[in-house]
Image (cartoon, rainbow over all chains, first blue to last red; front, side, top):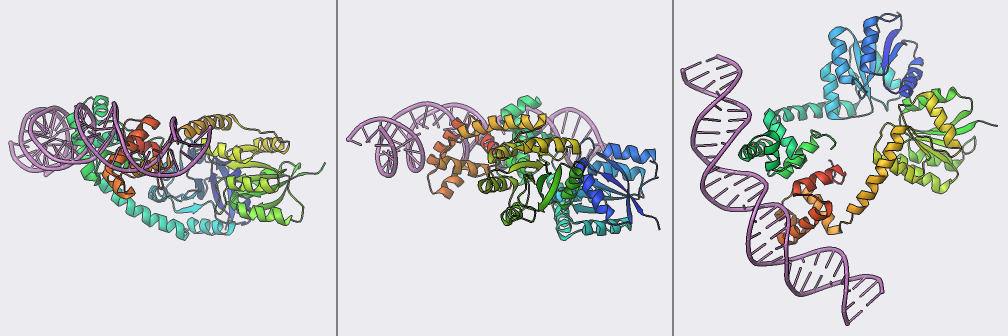
Length: 218
Length: 218
DNA sequence: CCGCGCCCTGTCCTTACGGACAAGGAGTCA
DNA sequence: TGACTCCTTGTCCGTAAGGACAGGGCGCGG
């Protein structure tokens, strides 16, 4: 049986180097191409490349131009048979859920040793997720949070707008002017926000939005 | 002249691999040892190692046990002659300032190519900082912010306490009870905070504190 | 000793906030 | 058409917030 063909996608040259060194330990793998972001990866897949399609993509999450989650979705919609393994430095509940939801087989941390990575890749090639305890915990936690968040995302478009302005420190009057609505309406939205989010005042709303990461530069 | 001896410090096995591959391109460098965190690095330096002390340390910022900034300080206090180059994924103003303040010669992003890294290391070995435009911009921005922050840290101990409670969404009454002072006093502190921080209401104070990273889990 | 800064407490007053409640107009869906 | 949601505007009312101002106690350095 021929070697498993791998496409590496990472914006760090350095990491790609390290990965190749890792994978050279195991003759069962062969790095057939590389890309530094999702768009490049897609281009390479479409052009076919000299060695044909890879069997497996090993991809970073955080990349410029097109990140890992978007890329995973895009790749799988065009090449449904491909196995994708996400490789990242960050163990955040949301990211893990996003990646798996997008169709990635496994989620591996960059702290892994060569042996662990190879084990995970061999599993992924067979369609079997191999996750360390940390990751699977993050996944379950993330899913739980996600469902809760969906509830609290019973917020309407307008309410979210108001919430973001509150999170920027605007007063009701400011918000009314910015959205071209009366201050009375703003107050209604704020009241609804307080009810839905189960909070007590606008300050808590602002903190809430920041904690959720809904505010730019927070 | 013999090769420049380098100690690699990074918690990612993978990154160390990549770095070694990078550095193999240039015979002027020799990786004499590795460590996965600051404590290990210090241990290795103290024990001397088989090949004697390195000339240069190439170190990640974000590491478990002992991070890059702490390690830089610790290393330089014991081995003042060593050149330290920080290698990291993050371009944050504060981090850059911290690193340089701690005594690092250069601050290099993990996105660099092999050539750029080698150039930076050769510069660092001669004590000359080599920074890309991004980094030097972050440095100047960071220094400006730092001085501003020091000004706004004209806050008294009590005021900081009140600010943190505001940033947790507490009302004046809550704060008074928590600090065992009357609500009147709390209001005085809040007024002073608003004046000193040049803000308009408690919500903006809360956001301010969060942006400054003064709040746990923010 | 006096001045100074910080902390505490207080009053008076205005404004912003937020709850309870009602209600019209627009759009969607069955 | 009716039921529904959302956005909108409004009123009434109580309370929280915050500005302006005055003053007492305490510790510290000149």
